Image (cartoon, rainbow, N blue to C red; front, side, top):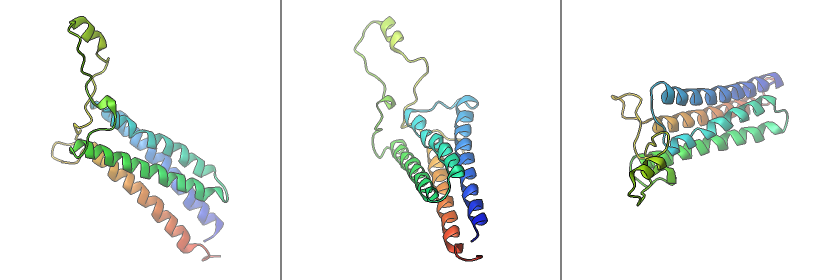
Length: 173
């Protein structure tokens, strides 16, 4: 594979990671602000890998030489972390385990004064983490499950592009 072809694959992966991160965050924004889906604490945490993925994709576009495999390894770790967060959240939604985040639980106060209770209420209602959000009523796959599938598909794309690069390196020279 020529240097130009390797650069093409590297740039394709970098651009696709930036676009994938922007798409995921844009979709989350759309679901939250247009469709009025309230995110829980785990949902908000699941957005962080995509923010980091955008930066890593930009770094991959700028990387040269021996730095490229390291940036690709970081991208793989980011996607594995995203997949792990999705798995934890699906487990909470399905009742396999309790949420690890304290903000997923309602705060029980012993205050009897109604005015104090109202003052302690958050500005926005919190959504419990064990309540799944579905994009379509007829599709029994929650947004969290879709996020896990999306992360898995991106991870497979990185692995496949790496295998293509390895398979054809040395040929075409």
